[in-house]
Length: 339
Ligand SMILES: C[S@@+](CC[C@H](N)C(=O)[O-])C[C@H]1O[C@@H](n2cnc3c(N)ncnc32)[C@H](O)[C@@H]1O
Image (cartoon, rainbow, N blue to C red; front, side, top):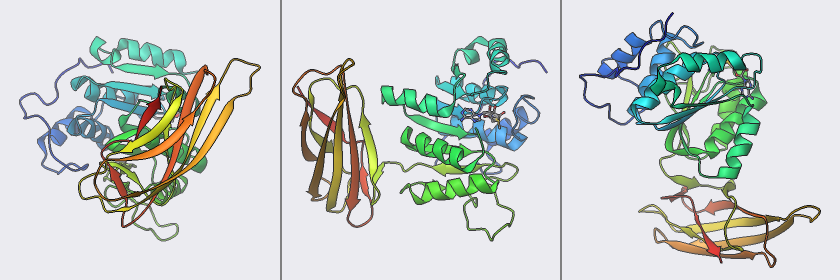
């Protein structure tokens, strides 16, 4: 089947808008997506409804940055690229399979120029990909399609790392969520990530061996949504500040959401400094605590700085919050740099 031209699927319709992560049956954007992706692209492993849903969701959320773990033959990548290109966004798609590498590159090369230009394909596994993101520190996804290795440990790893780089309100679409190993990974992910929730009936408790239900009919998706703000609860949540300028940090600024209840923030900050070999890396650790009086901006003092210049400085902040409900922040805590 030949590649279709780049086109505005929603031509003549108002811009897609509205809350929620599931389409209503009569939604005209959903109908257009269903018609377009009914039997296209042939290389996608997903069902027609699943293909249409990814397109619909990306455009509904006005998504600009998305990640696909598991490119396979790039069929689904084309769908994601179509939605992202319509909003001026970009797709990263990764796959560890070496044998299909050339074929994937050639396939992407056959797409209309606007689509292939919107895609970064990497022939690497998710651990290496997320490791590289660690160095950048600033990548935030509006959507991640978790569709790599469907074994419990790998699926959970991909979810946990995807969550770390998810934009507030972003969506994680997990394929083959109706497999028990993937379902339990999603269950354990939700239990350890406050503020995240499941779309549709997917995570309603099922009796042992009962058929598991997807978030959306005619798909095998579990769709999870990130909290709309940055949240911290009783379990430590990590924030990373990569490749800092200056000698270290002297505090972190918190901007609580309006209506935030008073509570206590506790944490550990770790500074890691590396210098050219054979020097040993330097590590400093500081325990921190502050009482938050409500929704006022608050600085948590934390003086962690190196005496000698370092080739590279990174700081990790592990935080917990105790109080009524969760700590909800407008943004991730901002590091105040020690010059
Ligand atoms: C189910 S297929 C992906 C299907 C594709 N998303 C689609 O909808 O057509 C799974 C793919 O994930 C890849 N994969 C498995 N484990 C991976 C990992 N840890 N990192 C990256 N890719 C992985 C496999 O090589 C395989 O191509």
